Image 1 (cartoon, one colour):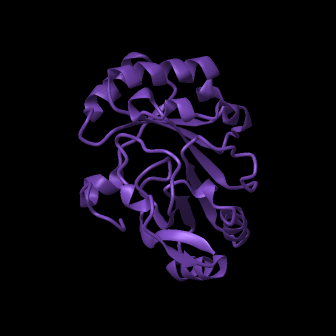
Image 2 (spheres, rainbow, N blue to C red):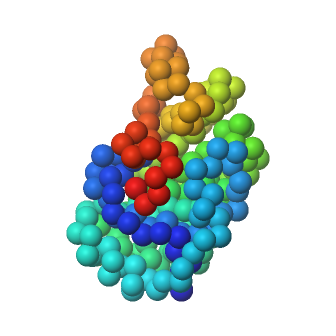
Amino acid sequence: MLRVNEIFKSIQGESTYAGCICGIIRLSGCNLRCAYCDTRYAYDEYFPCTVEDICAQMEQYKTRVLLLTGGEPLLQEECYGLMERLYRSGHTVLLETNGSLDIARVPGGVIRILDLKCPASGESHQICWENLEKLLPSDEVKFVISDQADLEWATRTVERYQLGNICRVLFSPVFDQIEPSVLADWIIENNLPVRLQLQMHKLIWGKEERGR
């Protein structure tokens, strides 16, 4: 049984798939406590659900794109079988993971969105740097940026590991903490090989809306 926080159908708000209709599975439990976390309710709120029941719900949604997020999905052993089942059923499967756990066991074909924690998160010391050696062109790396120091750190990290030559890289502002225009101007001025990402679901429904 998986510990599930919520299952819903919405518009994917982040990643390069932002704007697509998406079936979203949010698992409960996280090993990090980021300062800006916007899903604290997923730390310990859950209901038990089988892989079969989750797959049946996704089929009812009739969406091509599916997202497995959290919390931190990789904390639950059964998440690997769930991803395999969803991918083999013909879906585009996205995994959003906090970057602290090894991604090697994620089934082939699943798009891994690796959230590299910047210093202001309070959790950058938890990064599993070996994951960067396992990235594929289909994967994505996300930096959630709180301030200028985060911005400079993320830029150095992209350059040091040449992430722009490996996969898609996203810079996202912490909602209500750093203006998107500041981030956009920085990307332009430094000619960074990244994409600006705004949390589309919050712009549409507001930052407090759950199940969106």
